Length: 475
Image 1 (cartoon, rainbow, N blue to C red):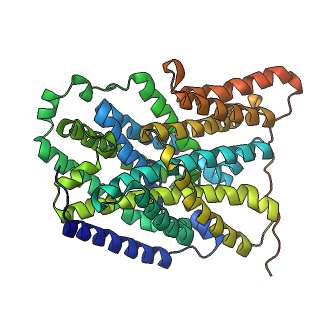
Image 2: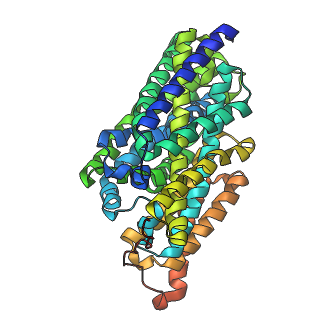
Image 3: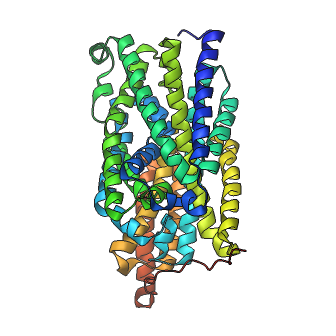
C-alpha cells in the first residue's frame, strides 16, 4: 500500500480540523439552553431529522468499520448486521413508536417503571448504562482505526482526540445541538462510504473478478457466519432498537405521535443500502489485501485516493465517530440524571442542567479506561445489543403479557440475563450458542418461574404511573 507524504497528511489533517472547528461553532450556535432542550429538544424536532439521528445511532463508526471488518473474513453476509436495523426500525415504527411517545417519558427505564416499579426501573437503567458504555468503547476503537491510518497517530492518541471533540459536542449541544449537526455529519458519512466503495471497486476491476477468484461463501446469504448467528444478529438488533435509550430519547423529541412513527420509518429506509455497501468494501479489501489486519478493511482504501478525496472520506469517518459517541454518551447522562440524581437531590432546573453537563464530561472520557480490552468490534457490538435485548423482553412482557409481569420477577430476570449473557460472551459462546439467545431466553424463564413459584400470591403488576420526584423551587 502507498502512504501519504507529510504534506498530504498535513492537508488531510487541516481539512479535518477545519471541519471540527466549523461543527463546533455550529454546535455552540444551536446549543441547548435548558434541560428540556438538552434531554429531548423540547419535543420540537422534525421527523426526518429524528430519522437521521436514529440511523446514525445504529450505523455509527462501530458498525461502519465493524461490518467491513467482518465482511473481510466472512463475506457479504456481514451486511445483515446493518440490514437488521432496517427491519428493527420498521417494526418499531409499526408497534412501539406511538406507545413510547404517548408515555411522555424520555428514558426507557421510566417508561418501563409504569408497568413494574422503581427497582425494575433502576435495574434497567444500570444495565442500559453498562451496555452503552461498552458501545462507546467500541466506537472509540473503530474511530481511532480510521484516524490513525491517515494522520500517522497511534491508536491511543486517536482515541483521546475522539474523546475530547465528541465530548465538547454533546456537553454544549445536548440533543438539540447534536440533532442538526448530525444532519451534516450523516450526509458527509454517506458521501464518504460511496467514495470508498467507488475506489474499492475501481481497484478490483468490479465485482466480477472477485466472484471468480474468492471462495464461494463470500457471496452467499450466510457466508461463514451461519444462519443461527445471522438470526441472532437480527433478533438482537430489533430488540436493541426497541429498548436503546437514545432511540427512546430521539423518539420523544418528535412533535407528535404520528411524526414519531414516521421518523422510525425514515430510519428504516436510510439504513437499507448501507449494509450492502459496507460489506462489499470489506470483501474487496480481502480480495486486494488478503494478509492485512481485518480492522483496516475500510480505511485501507484511503491510501489509494487522491489526498483531497481522502480528506473528504477521513472527515466523513471522523463525523461518524463523533455523532456515535455523542449520542450514546448523551443517553448515559440522561439515565444517570433522570433515574438517580433527580430522585436523590430533587434539584432545581438550573442545578439539574449544571449537573447534567458535569456528568456528561466524565462520561465522555470514561471509555478510555476500557479500550485496550476490546475484542473484535462487531462481536462487541452484538454483545451490547444482547444486553439491551433482555430489556426489550421485559418491556414486551409488561406491555402484552401482564399476567407474568411483576416487579420482583422483572428485576431478577434482568439481573440474571445480564450476568449469564456476560459470562456466555466472555467464555466465547459455549457450545456454539450465541449469547443473543441467552439474553432472549433468560428473562422469560426467570419471570415464568417466579410467577409459578409465587402463584396467586404474586403481587399485581404496577399499573399506576409513577410521579416524577418533586423539585425544589428555583431561587
